[in-house]
Length: 175
Image (tube, rainbow, N blue to C red; front, side, top):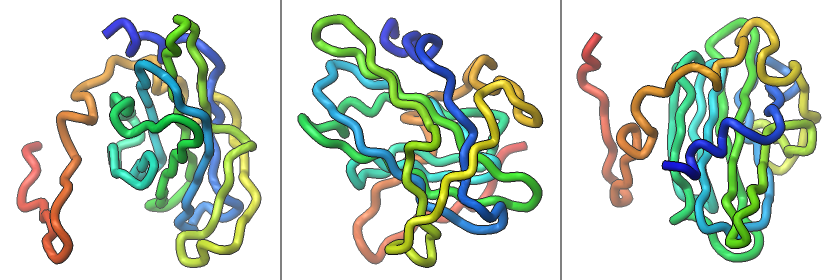
């Protein structure tokens, strides 16, 4: 998709986290909609679940393989909220994302992870904490994972919407 290729342009995202690498965080950012197409690319060392306006759009536990997802159907006119629930499995922790919004006038607006995002501890959602920056895309130890070829697009995997009281359980992963 030509609009998907917009992810290659624009500003570089910053690898961000909360103040404690061993804490689970909810990272959020508000942005204006009004786009005709919207593609999101994200990675987290180690785990993330992404939501747009409360709807789950992607998840991953492989920071080396960023997810890409078309989120246009989840956007609304006016304010929108991008939320990432992130967790670490030890060592250094960070999250990075880029959203490319193709506007009706053929311009492209970008939303990238940076210090302007909000962070709360998952266990204390009412208490905001400081964002910790680890540097822009390309910094060690992650390198530029966004430049690597993408495998499956997130809309093709990892999304299950089930009624209340039901759950999805992974029984086997093919090596």
